[in-house]
Length: 148
Image 1 (cartoon, rainbow, N blue to C red):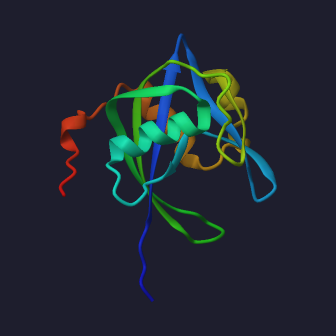
Image 2: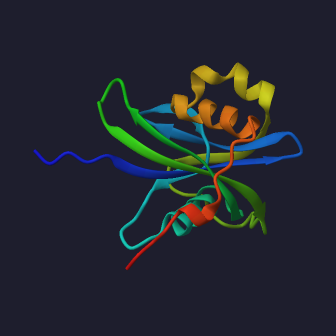
């Protein structure tokens, strides 16, 4: 068997003390996540996070730093995820743009609201990413290289 982790990207987006999360349906459950998704063939990590934020929130995302690189194994299905989480700003919201399949809404939440709904977060990576953001952890984007 050929094992490989699922490479994903996510964005911690904070504005005026509120974080942008997406509500989505996963296996019939309504959960909350940062805008996130899988790296697609031929994409750079930066291109992937810009695309995912746009598809899931209808905002244009400007990444400013790499926040965390997380390795996590889902306890139930045993899938492994290698997640590159970015932080940055959003611009140019298009309220007429349909959101990605499975996305119910993109909503801004206060930190306390997120903490109270931790049992409804898609994975522990969501909360850990917020804590990393709050700690001031930042890695310059120049660390990332995409070679053809």
